Length: 497
Image 1: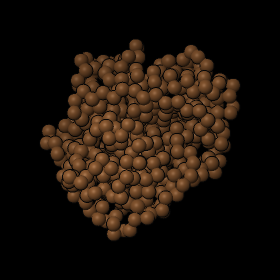
Image 2: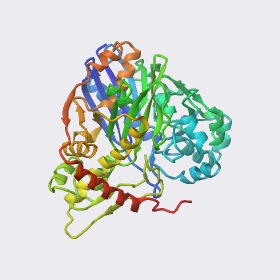
Image 3: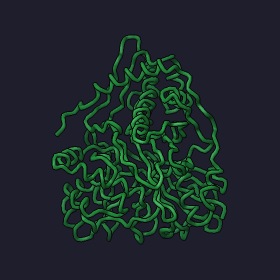
Image 4: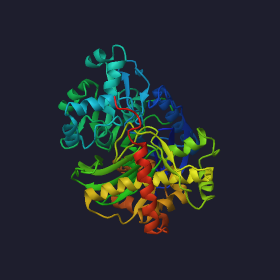
């Protein structure tokens, strides 16, 4: 057994990456899929396209690497988390497009739950806030808006799952309907203290228990691939939501260690050990992973729009032809020229939790160029990350020593330097930046004995580059002051229902 295959099902693309025993990526394949925006603030995916794109890259990377059951130890899965799919248990057909984690259509449901006084109960049991981000209200919306869905769900005819559950269902030919503790902890339906689906929460959100997948640890053999082909019979042995997988892939195994993933969104997680830390500053308390019978937790700050702002500059405004061009364009100017960019395309996440905020660009004058807007866009990613880390440090009382960075956008040296400046702390990029997929591979490989414990994994982590702060604290304080002014203008732009 020489390799582990990681399936990394993300928000805009599906990827498959083969890792060797040293934790190095050997082969990778990626396929984008369509984004659907039926109304402002609504975001959907086609579940069939999610599956087809993921299976195509899995088969493609298998063929390119000549993998077989003889040299492939296991398959690990990591996924966009709160995206919600409901399908027919008999036919396997989804009843509706997947409602993506970015989708804000359930804001009125969340507002009603708050008016009904449910917020404290939800926070206490789940570690989450009442926000459209999470899966529970999306399930409720589907049951209330798809003809006959609620009656079918109550009869046990429908299955709910996040993308991990959907992929395992498809890979096993419908034999297994499971999720892991990390994905379960993002639904508003899972009690992170009892580590089980919660009857009170299910009733509160009007979700029948019969729909729910079985919750399993993040590292164990869930089943085998049943789809005909060279991957048939390979054990599916690891599963974690993308951000928890990245925390694991970054070897943040000790309490106090933190990472930030720069992807479509931006997600900062800090390991808090075996006890969940209740946040007083609008952070999320989430399951980090469940391995070897032990559940560990993390504080998380979720930023909805990070790399997606670069995609918008490319696709929406045409300022760049490809995402990597953003670095050169932003470097063409020494500063933002007074421009501040709040990319609240689908509301603001932590620590603001404002689903009614909308994107705002302030400070535009005749002297502003595309370079200034590009630089302000990169700064917006870093300033949002500062807001999250500041709140997280208030909760934990621990000052950050360094931030480990990963995700597709961390290859941007200017972005990493701006982040170090804004945080006034070192930012470290690892040699292997595919830490989300690597975390899934590690979890799968631990379950099959491919890796012998966390110490072996931690020894494989190595830095690529360390970014030290270069800007003065006074200059960064002024930048943050103007950012706060722009935030005020973006908040509550839409009228709450």
